[in-house]
Image 1 (cartoon, rainbow, N blue to C red):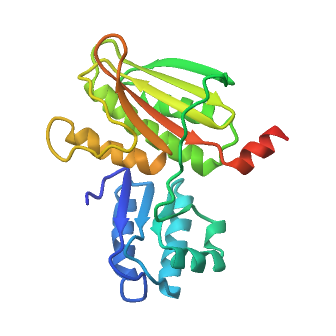
Image 2: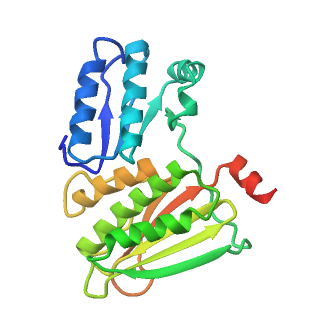
Image 3: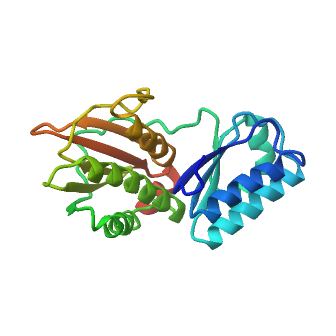
Length: 252
């Protein structure tokens, strides 16, 4: 795994305990030293977490938060999830159970958006575009961590779009609904389509884009790509759902 990645998925092989924690710590520290600020720890093979593993999680979380980044756990088994809840880890960081990806239903066509904003992006304004998306999403009932992740997901989509677009540039549209935010990134380069649950290309012309899509799927609740209805190019659609409790609080 390259040490200069902006977003990284770190696998844990076997239990996260006193024997495995040092190697995982070195891997995360190497990524952070290289500038990575968003780390997912893949717990799919973890059946047990001891005090050394817990200490690793909390230490690396504090370190990344101090640097303006974030660490989270994904593919956590039910047994480990319950243990982390008893240890109050869930109060401090995002933890996602195995198979617990949010179900994104189709938009009800009778529901009108709260607002919509569209702006153009070129290869010299990616940072400004990411920040603008973040500012728009921060007006909705999302946590700071959710906004942070969506900014990163949009950054991946924008980077791909700018690399593959024509002189017409890239358009970003942010639309707010009562239960979700929709971010669409449109380019005019070589087009292809990918449904939200479709397998990603391992080889071929779109393999590089596929790696970015995998990262976006870690950060957003839904990622799909469709051909533009008019002209050449693609539209990447990123959806972030408003948590029911946040939605209820916003409506109160």
